Length: 122
Image 1 (tube, one colour):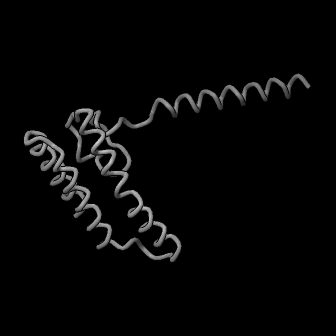
Image 2 (cartoon, rainbow, N blue to C red):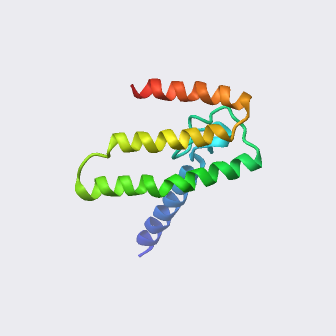
Image 3 (tube, rainbow, N blue to C red):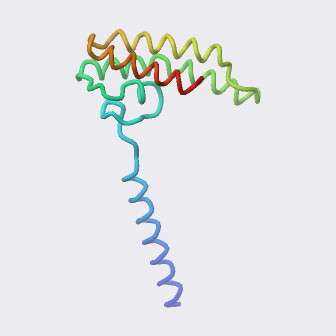
């Protein structure tokens, strides 16, 4: 009986240590220069957004999220690949709107980041 308790305690401690370790390894947000999920991670690298720009960025992401989700769900449901043409159209529109909220200095960095991103996809 004592062996079972000790084993259970050891397993619980391992689970806690694992979850704490995983929490510490989360990526930084896009505005911190890290790579975040979704639009804006890599292309906003090196750009510090103001609070107003952060709100606009969030609104842009929320605007396009349903379209992207629908595209992914359709591909998942039908078992076909994601429509790359439609995906590119959505991403281009989202990128254009995101660029529009930036200052001219930020746009220069943004344009470089977009070029690097596109270079990596080709």
